[in-house]
Image (cartoon, rainbow, N blue to C red; front, side, top):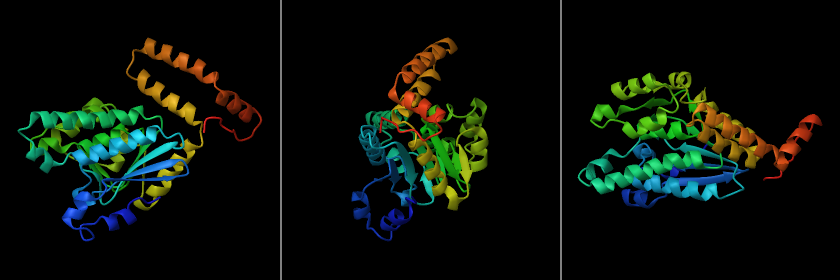
Length: 281
């Protein structure tokens, strides 16, 4: 897979003039064997969630959500950083424009929510630092695999901007006091700490990152896509409910799933000790 090598070389500051870089694509999409890899292409700026980056990611995710041939999405980045969060230069330029700022944060929030609404599972491939809204981006993906070199932080307090919106996503992945420590100190945590706190699923050496991401994506992609999509949506709905409501929804979803052709095929395949042939892609 390795989304970074060719793209980084092609879009490095040495390869492109400032004008050409401004016109270059912000996100690259590569589809292979039912897996769509979206790669952020601004390594020289640490892949910030600027207005163009947010717009590009939302456009790609919207297209992928409607593409039944795609079973899994991988969110990746070029360069040494995964994502440094919002572009501070952009924020400074619009500090006095409340309407523009509110639109930016609303659109960024819509991007984060869209990740959970995607029918396909989304895996973050975190090769480097993920800070502020970049840390939020990792937290809102369904799964995350990090290089042992990755770091995570909510450092807004260091520059006079509290990471309030990033905290929404991160607080839904790790414990409250752990989030508050990151928010109040601005200090970064390493990949092993992120793993222990539940922010990422797996940590591997940098050279094994692509293989581990592809292993997860291929494994998930081998399941019934219809079942995975429905199960993902039911999960996100029930985690915000009371216990009684969550069980009621989950029971109804179990009944619905058992009525699908894939359930019959899956059970028959298991009892017959053979691989299933899914009817939904």
